Structure formats: C-alpha cells, structure tokens
Length: 320
Image (cartoon, rainbow, N blue to C red; front, side):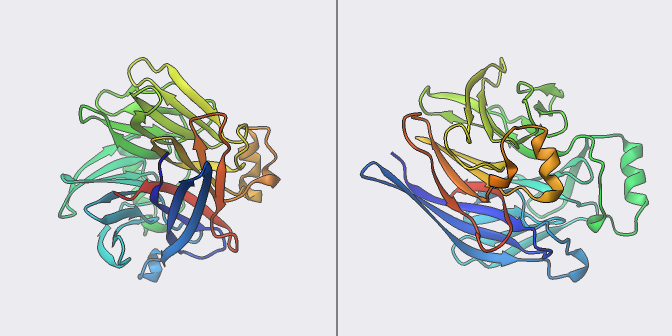
C-alpha cells in the first residue's frame, strides 16, 4: 500500500480573491487509511487591478521543487517547502487560466477564457498561441474590452480545462463542452465521449493491469480510465457509488493502489447545471479529497478541505 505527500490547489467562493495551496498526507497502517490536510499558503495578485473574486488557484504542476500554478490571469511559481513566490508570468491575453504544464522546455498554459493554448519558453517569452476558435473571434474578443484579463469571457465554446503529454511528445487537451480529450497534433479524438463534462485528462499507469491509460474525471463524480489508442473504457468508477463524497468532481492523482479525487461543494448558482449530469442530491455535497482504492472491497477514505470556508479543489499533485 502507498503512502505519501501531495499538494492541493484551489480557491474560495466567499467573494475574496485568494488562491490556496495545501498539503495532504495519506497514510496506510494496519489496514486503516488516514488522511490529513494542512494549509500551506494563500495568495492573491499583488496588483489589485488583477484580482477576480472567487477565482483563486486552478491547475498546477511541479518541476524542480517549484509549484507552478494558474491564478485567474497570472502563472505563479512557489518554492515548495519555503512557500515563497519565486517567479511570475503575465500576459495581457490571459483570462480564466485553468492549467499550466511546466517542463524543462517551458510552460504550456490552458488559457480557457481566450480559448487558446499558450506556449512559453523558460524565460517567459510567448512562442506560440494555439487558437481553439477563429482568429476573427479571438481578435474581436481582445478588442472589445479595455482589460481582457479581468473581464467575463463567457461564452466558452470549448472550455479547455487541462493539458498533458502523450508518450510520444504530443499534446492532449481536455474540452469540457465537447466532453472529450483531443490530440492537438491532428485534432483527432483521444478519448471516448464522456457522459458529463470532464476535467483532468492525462496518461498514467493503471497498476492492476500495468497499462498506460488515459484518465479523466467528470463533474458528476465519475472517473474513467481508457485505452488512448482504441478509446475503449478499461475501468470506470463512481465516487458516490463507492461511498465517497458528492460534489463537483475535479482534481485527480493516480497512485499505486488507487486514486485521490477532489470534490467541491455545489453552490446555489451551479446546482441546476450539476443536476443535469447526476441524480445525486447536491445538498449533500462537500469540499474535500477522497482516496478511492482500486480494490473495490476496500472502503473510501476522505478528508474535508477548509471546512470553515466555502472552498473549491482544483488539482492534486504528488510531491516528488
């Protein structure tokens, strides 16, 4: 059985602009699983003009002991352990950022508000901006407001939420509106069509079979592991059916003996949308992290995240 330390990113729904990073510890001992969550930092843009209420932190990745994380319109890097801000990446076309993939070659940013994938080198210089809708629409959206970074950018026709590498260095992009993962090299589908909008979307080993599979969560509490070539669903789990928490499901970390899965309490303004995809009672939802074992005879364990504040979970990362 595996134990370990993990970092969790997210934000709050109390009108503030804070994002948070917390540390999760998972322990297996004597057949019992225990989990604990400790806040490590909260942060909001220093420039008050860039603060967007209720956004906080979104997707993140770890590289060379630095946590790279998306704010609403900035990408920030924190030194893991010292929890000090080390780097900051700004761009006038950043809006509603959802994920950053940090690699030795640079940073790939899912710019959900602009509907683009933005590629930067390690110096922070923009190398490419892959548009998901037309040039004309992108230009019009940038020109219609004086400050794009803090404007409301809906409607999102694609609503990209995550990016990841393929085993042969391609780029996968998760599209919530299309309910699929796409291969950006030729814009072919890389996943089945999910029954609800997906988050996450990455390749990882499925320890029980030893296969490298494509993993995704859906907002309704389902987790899918599929063959990245044939798109066949190899494994499918329902977090509520296994006794886990109900909530907007986003944030996934696959480990040797199971998965860590994030849920966020459903609020009044997204309850109707949530109920489109599930019959679960949203009034029972809560914000936390669940450990879902591969062994379906083993119980699900969970821990609440910021029970004293209306918080959300966005990403879960194993500390190298």
